[in-house]
Image (tube, each protein chain N blue to C red):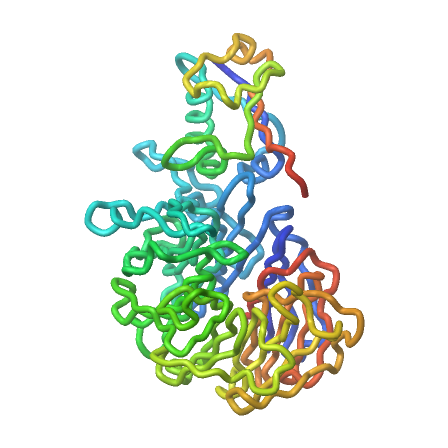
Length: 99
Length: 395
């Protein structure tokens, strides 16, 4: 399935992409499978969204799906169908915490 | 024709300033890594085109960048531009930002906590790379000073990093405490006469030395006196801000401590105070003239709570006697209403015939002197807060 991912500007620059990322992801769509696919395609993003070792989301990064904050959901929880079909993007957002 | 390249790290990007040997006209390249905190950039002494850079953000963590063409282009060492992002077996590259503390049963397992500000045990947590120190002889070998304090080394041009855990493994590790800026390893000095000897400094654990290439370390803080800790002459716990060395005399070190400017003539076995007639001996930066091992520079800062120059006058102080006797250098520097700071990694020297001295301020100015400090001029004056300044002398 072809999904869409939006990245904050700093990560777009690191990954050398201008806009949304489109990725083909196999199997059950979850935060973990999305991030695994993203990091496999763009290894320069490893460690910038979640920790290299613990795989925990970095504190100032949040995930949104269909307008809902899913940052605190289980990384293995299924994502909504609209993300699966590509109708909506999976959004990776930098928390707003000053300059 | 000789020239100079000044590498400036700021809170919001890196800047590269270049000039010919006259050091009168400067070109400033556009911001590199705009918007990121650039704690440090440093060129390899063995290959001036090889530059390493520490790029970080509270949001997205640590990135290591490398240039192989003198700062014109950059890449993350694990993923060279134009190359596949995976190895033939499908393993992703770009491990170059992976700094993982040693937790192996043999060498790392006991290193579980240091002290938090309130004295309670606190787990080591990687935060950022404060300082990058390329090897004197091998462009692919580079050391990284880390917060929380540890020393890492890469021998493959910054692709992979391994901790030299003998430093944290020194018995005092669990007693180390952070300073106000965090528990950072900010100074790495490689002894040009002995490849097995390295000096490092940590705020606020103190200074350490290895004589076996990083396997074992000893604290070198005898003679330091810090009134702000319960035992002012403790073996560790001193807030060392910066150490400097002249490469012709690596056993002599100069230190700017939280308070006090210090000197050792025996590779850190004993220190003595050389603050002399300084108006205040608090400060961060210290450096040594490129050709005169007893000429040293500091920028006195009013106090540990008032991080600006005394009397609103930005003055570099120079000693030509290895300390104790200091002269104020003011020509070309603001002498009224100046309230900037000069951070610990923000002073450097070039090695041209008349030694150039450079420093950057929290107000975004980089000042340079092409006459060993006699006169100064801003070579750029409206950058973001300057965190680090390094200089490459190009032939």
